[in-house]
Image 1: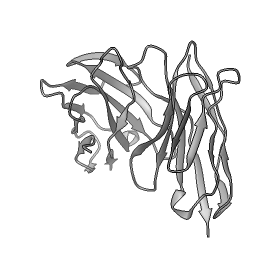
Image 2: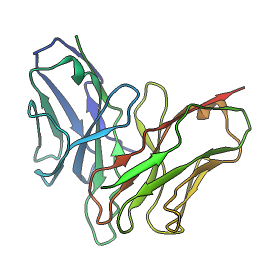
Image 3: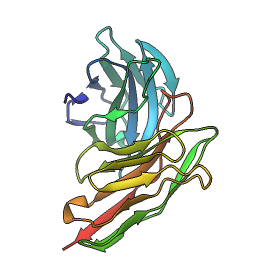
Length: 116
Length: 113
């Protein structure tokens, strides 16, 4: 079965550089979520999109922005990178909303960002 | 707000031992409850879920029952294998759905031969 695809899988950047992470949801999933997992920590919610509109916002720094495109893929843009941004970034998607909806979130493999 | 409390690890067991990882939650209404597993160096995989009281989720020999009266969702497996070594996260999404997942801190399980 198709899964959530994230690219790149690994990314190394210098401080103050920018990074763009991409997420391709499972087909027929229209809601995308982004999470950040620091070393030894649980994932923390950053932001979500439904039908290309921001649906919820968590602890996302102002230096980060994200959007969802017409094909439902999403991109997380990170600027002025700091050492503390080094983490595993997960994207998750959930299925289209129907009367018998299930909001289960399926996670991608993550992008490991290292800021030097 | 919503929260998930799970036992801190690491938990070290011998192969074929019985596993219990405790999880309790705080949320209004009827949240959906999940267990996710993260193998070393990998992403999060959905292990099992339950969406209403008394539901039992099960997968790969793991089970958890949604207990509304005790607000618990304990993970159990009758006989663990070395390949079960991973970090296990208890999690919830609120009633109404399509909202962020709130995770517990994760419990690291190490199974030794």
